[in-house]
Length: 441
Image (cartoon, rainbow, N blue to C red):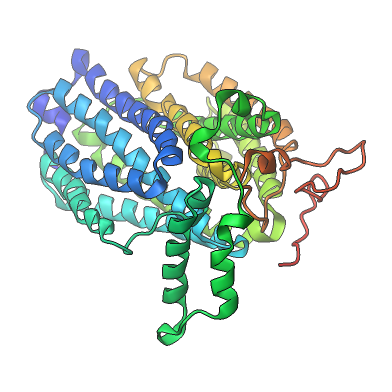
């Protein structure tokens, strides 16, 4: 683009920190949005959060394009990140809770690939536009079209959440719509299906999600263990992925490098999605995540050793391999977390993990804020933490092709079986540490 906010407001030299502040607050907006709207997704529903976030994101983005000063743009960018995080989280939850166990991975990877397509589209628009305000309007104004999702039966609420929220009548209506769409030539439902829909209220006697007390949440030690491990893994994966970005400011001469890095990043994301779609259902979530973080930690340590040998032949190979592995680990950590967190608190739990991932992305703007000083120490700490993730991942359960846990007690059963004690009956995970045989469906 010929014009951007750096050139328009001369944000260079002593004012370069304002660009870093805008990027930092944008990521903090995502973190706050994941936390706040994740809580709302468990309280008022996934559909309501998505519609609210998309309805406000369009006007917020258009207002940001009309901002007359850097502080105004920074505030609107924070709000835009907050809203986009809620829309992203709500759509992820609905997509996951709509699928049966054998289709969850395909639906998740399909959604990720659509996001990758959006990155390529954004790059093309950035190359075509000559002014950053026009680009801001083009990518945010179409959000107003998504308000059509509010049309009855066009965008359905998650039936799983409706059952957990003790709203069986609405869950029956949603399931009837889905069944009618899936039946050829609008055939009527059979007697067995009608009887199953009528018995929903009796077969799901769960406490309402809004009635879960803080003491009940704090008592779920196994759920918190899974949350902390996966949150830590997501934070380290995003932190390592972004901390190796160049620390210099983006000027006119660096535009070609910026577009090249953006293209490489989108291509890496596509490759990561294809790899996960091919391997995860075959080898299991936990095994692939363990392998991915192990290789990512080794690649990060090798890059640290080659830091003073920038033209050494192995360096470019590891520089390309490392972000690919880290992106796989980040995507897989979120998927595994969504499959082991109970439906009653899935919005809050997944929001916490996604917020930690957004905070991990702050490693890049923080390096630019300090002009790259202290980057080596930061790389060493994150690489060591990546190796620590390997030991933590061994404590996770395997969720491949298993039903989603609904209540808090179901989440407490999602644990790795003990290596010393016999397995308790009713435990969700009956596989060894790394072996992940496909259960019968």
